[in-house]
Amino acid sequence: MNDLVLKQCRIVDVENCLISESDIGITGTKIVKIQSGLTGTETVDVGGRFVAPGLLEPHVHFESSKLPLSAFVRLVMAHGTTTVVNDPHEIANVLGVRGVKETLREARLQPISVYTTIPSCVPAVPFETAGATVGVQEVEELLGEDGVIGLGELMNFPGVLNGDPKVMGKIAAARKLGKVLEGHCPLLRGEDLKNYVAAGISSDHEVTEGWELEEKISRGLAVYIRFSGSQGQDLERLIRYIIEHELPTENLSFCTDDRPVGDLVRYGHLDCTVRIAVSLGLEPITALRMATCNPSKHFGLEDRGVINPGCRADLVVFDDLTRFTPELVIAGGRIIARGGEPVVPEVPFDYSFGLGSVHCPPFTAERFAIPYPDARARVRVIRVVEDSLITESAIHELTVRAGVLEAEIERDLLKIAVIERHTGRGGFSVGFVTGFGLQEGAIGSTVAHDSHNIIVVGTTDADMARAVNALSAMGGGEVVVSPEVLSTLQLHYGGLMSLDAPAQVVEETEKLEAAYRALGGNLRSPFMALSFLALPVIPTLKITDTGLYELGAQGIVKQELILRDDAN
Image 1 (cartoon, rainbow, N blue to C red):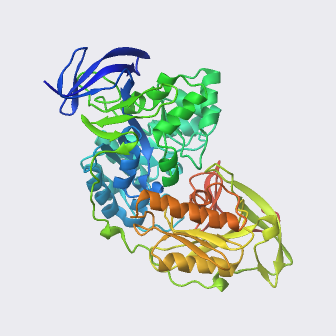
Image 2 (image 1 turned 135 degrees about the vertical axis):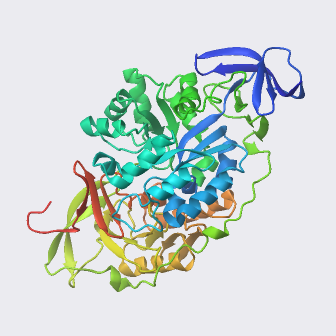
């Protein structure tokens, strides 16, 4: 007798693009029979609804949801995700090996499968100060932990191409253990791409253009098309390119990478991506295949991603192929969600080890001053691009007032600073940014990929100092400073995540964004945009606690803020 039987199923064969009608018998964690007339200890009549394999997330940093892993899992599993491949890169940059090991321990407690790739670039580049360093020895140790499936995204692709001994040592350790090597190589092409793949890298999730997608597929890379929700909206462009050029989809998957809690609550997880892809013209079963068996095969998880006897009973029940909305979710043979809500108990976990991670001395407005002897200065400026992780590098001429460079609010040329918050030494750098639209005040955060130092944008030095001090005082989070009000979202856990209920985090985030817009801000997701301005492994111009950096054909190059003579 089966433990659980699903009756009257329309089974979606994602491999062969077929639909068949039958019952599904489950014993323990496995599918044991697919035939009509089955009986079981528990029977669920799905009434002719579709049944597809559970969705698989191939690349995500759960910390970007601003929730700890257990809370993140409860949200995504209610939307049909039954396997997650998580890269705890953010907590590793703050809390090091301890943070990764605690996350692994938490992952093993979840009602769905949570695999881990070990962060390969902590810090991401040598041009910033992280809270920890995860070297070759540490990576070797962590790769042997239970639940580890691969080496996390090798975002230091210049290090791969140049044969950096530390980078290559981590690659060698992963290959020796037969682990998957995950990639990160935005806009890489030609011989450089060929050499990157030759090092053993198997995937990339940074594709933003059609030509890039086509070339990376041709090189044999598994490409994860990213839809994070608020930032990095390349999904529409790439899906249209796939359809127009009739590209093969066998090596294509969907990922979210960094998805904020508000989008998870309002729109869902990979189910949202599947719905959008179908609405753009992608065949429904093709879209489902990209969220199920394609990523399963990539990671060698042959026991899932399809509905066959002997496979893990990870299943999603829904009633419309074109509007994929999970109604019933089963993971490992157990019903874990109905009607978009979890039906299994929450997983308790002790996060005390991750508290008190912000160490920053008090800041005064004078520290943000940029002295300059001439009347005018040509300045390198970061230009934020709405809905993209990629920035542009611009040059603007500013007027020097009383011997210092200040924000020019009427031109939307604001100051930006990154302040190191791990050691207590408080090293920092200052630059200029355009795109935030603030008319007064400042915004700041302790979420700043990847080293997660304090990052702040403001209209005056005094407002920026007030933001920095507020973030330090509350032990991490996000803040909006106005002349009258200080709006905050506390992120106690590593300065990255809240231990409050998701609904409360969403409410407080909405209040923060409303406070930002009340100051004239015009970005849809200001804090997500802010968080990526400190990440120099994504083009083009970024800022860390040690200065401005530009990613181009020559790799990552440090740039001067003020251009002198014929500099460009």
